Each structure stands twice: as C-alpha cells, then as structure tokens.
Image 1: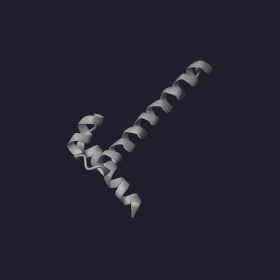
Image 2: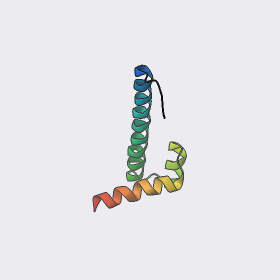
Image 3: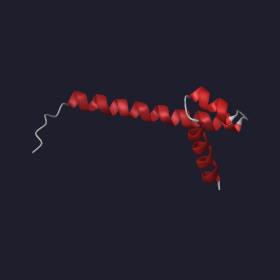
Amino acid sequence: MLCAKYDYKTDIAVKQEEAFERGQEQKAIEDARAFYANGVSIELIAKSLKMTEEQVKEIISTEQADMN
C-alpha cells in the first residue's frame, strides 16, 4: 500500500519546473526551424542548440511533413 504525504508546495514546484522544461524544448525546436529556414547548416544548428544532428533532422523532417 502506498502511503505518501501530499505537499502542495512541492507539487506546484514540480509542475512549474516541468512547464519550464517544456517551454525550453519548444523554443529550441522553433529556433532550429528558423535557423534552417534561413540557410544555416544542420551541423551548426546542432552545435548552437546543443542537440544532435539527428535531433535537428527529425525536427526539420517533422516540419516538412506538417507542411504537406
């Protein structure tokens, strides 16, 4: 049986941290798409945004699929 004590302040702090992380991820995706649209190489985008080239390629391919 699970018997855990609920702490409202901890719950709010965790939710805020998760929201912040999601926002940072979304910003990185938007930045990668903008850089690529302006002719920046995948290699440079990956280095600038601390991603792998595979992650950047996935972001770009997802955007292109969304446009079709």
